[in-house]
Image (cartoon, rainbow, N blue to C red; front, side):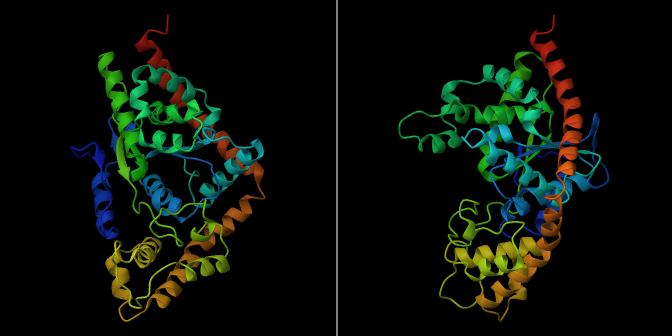
Length: 368
């Protein structure tokens, strides 16, 4: 069965990551016994369709979901288009992004297993329905103190902040609790939202004297917050394409971006995120790409300079991303397969969602 630690947040991140992280992962989900008393361990994750997927998405979340899928967990993976609407987007852009993200996830190998439901969030009305009901358990002051809200609201200098930004974490909690997920792989920047979901589950269970919602556990990213190649003090983001390696980048684009990555004037290779953020970021990306550790990369770079590190990193990324890029390009020409995958995911997810909402309504008194 799944092994939980006393802390509700299992921090998978360590300075060197790699093999030590792998041992932590095996401790979290026992390799020989992955089933809870009520069936396989349920994992829920959502990926917002805000543009092309990049290596930060892959090494931070997608690769971890692939490990969980291989471990025979029950995965619910949402293309979170309702969350994407918290920022106004033209309809064609939203449609394109949903197709792009779905293609990217399938190209990575996610969503094809019998225990995985890859689906479009807006196709299941239960997400919005549960969000409204959970809203009765949380206060306005609590939501207005959330870091995500304060950061986004600051961009609206006229004060006309969309309500969706305020209720964003409640919808995220509904995403998790709707499938009664026990494990939620999220990055460091989503820890506060996970804690809110955990608290809402506790409040509901206590208010109605039930043990209905499991308290979701956070599974931290294997390689959290890979940095921009152009501004290594900042998180890699699709908003700065020159500093971001996209999963469908061509070999020439990958080599060009890595070659132009900002480093420093020191020739030797060493790992120091504070004093040498650019070089340290390249080392972490190399370790993530090759399935090794920072120490392994440093050992192989003995006697090499930064230019040689960049060259070997480019080669590793090109080799790692080639099958994903080719599969992605093929899927762009197969829209029917994308639609069929999402339709199958809706069918799988709706069964669990309907079951949750029927029981929820009985508990709160909405069923006559």
